[in-house]
Image (cartoon, rainbow, N blue to C red; front, top):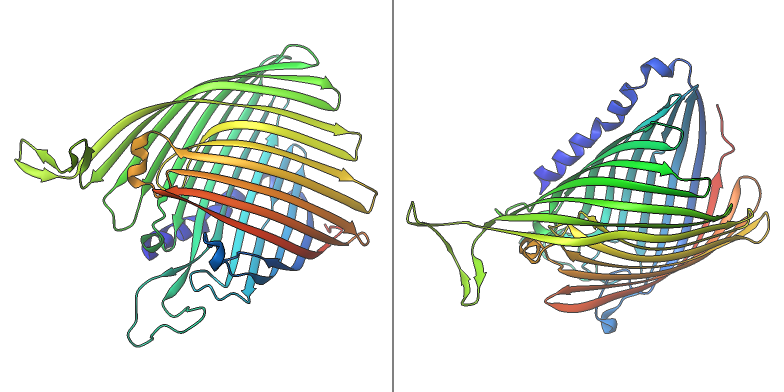
Length: 441
């Protein structure tokens, strides 16, 4: 996978330059502000190795650090934001030889936006390299036999390398009507995909929307969208080519100046084409494909369609400036590294509260379920079904204008089905010390 991973990395390298190249006309009069932030922490995890068997769970301690720089530039109607970030962690005390004991990630997002009298446009782009927390076996070297404990001799750290572009434009056609268009493009590669059995993919989507304000409290919306998904696995001739399109309608109502209720509902159709299969499944068992014209066996192609209901219901409330709550139920179509688009069902809730000017807290919970669109999507997919649960609680104490202390507890449970269903649970307890600059020009 070295070649594919390098392709993603080289492509991502020019992305910040492209975004900045769009700025010369406005950059001469831009006022810049820079706000640095650095945090360091230590934590404990009950199952950092992601073991599904509770008898084999191996707990460990984690030292982590994050550094980022918020960059903001403004010039009249132009606004520029960038946030380069580094993340790193070192795991100690674990004996699990199938997991990484360290990682170093980078994230490089940038956005340029422009406002006109009746329109607003933006261009977002970025690149990232994020560890999957997997240490991949790449072969046995007779000159370097495996060592006990964490064996890194024949293992490599796997990273997801991604770059993306996301332009959007909104135009106020009348005092009550806004028309918008948005486009997203993602290119994702995995540095060790041929060993981890993840799939590289490209995903694109476009949406045309219309919002109409009925009165000061309510808004209706209509949208049409289309998305494409192409997935390949290094060393395999199998490819997934999926096209999804759909329509949706929405309604948002302001219950009070601080509380909003929203609803969207729609339908989509996915056309899935899996090519390069060595055989097809039949009631009689797997059979190869025969080309009658050539009178020879060829790789098989399977096609299918899948119709899905999509939508969401949400409630948001901000009581004064101290309490924020949100509840959300949603279903969407998303790309996935297992080789297919998936239907993603989510239920989430969170509460944030400022107990005082110096003390704040957050409580959140989320459940998500994913399944490959169309049963034939599993031809390139390792995980046909996945259920994910998480609960998070945190407290943040501001020590002064620049320093803060945060404690965080997180529980996650990842249930996946690959013929058999297994569960990976983990408890995390972390303490962070963070420094945030006051900003400079």
